[in-house]
Amino acid sequence: MIDSPVTAKFDFIKSALFRVVHADGVFGGMTPRGGILLNFYNERFPIPTSVLHQITSSGEIGDEIRSEREGRKGIVREVEIGVQLDLAVAKAFVAWLQQKINDAEQHKSSTTILSDDVRETV
Image (cartoon, rainbow, N blue to C red; front, side):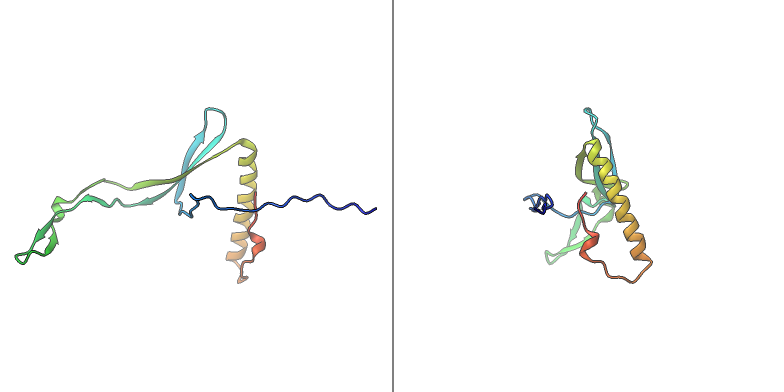
């Protein structure tokens, strides 16, 4: 009798909250129970909270009065998503991420088109 390999099939289903976000950085640390929390953020200059415009004699919106603009000062770090990992998953993630970095660096130095085999699960 020939033994068949043991297999397990995994189907990927996107949750209703799934989205792709841009990350300029990550802020986080340990959780009270020893997990690792990663809060991914993007950076941008702030948008105004309010602006004041002149109204022309014909009733149309005219130029903004820039001296009256209100809003935050500095650079905004907008936290998009927090990801909490236990230690084992964090270690697997580091190894997976390092491999993706290696793949990206190798691809950057070649003209090869990326294939499905460079996308995989931790």
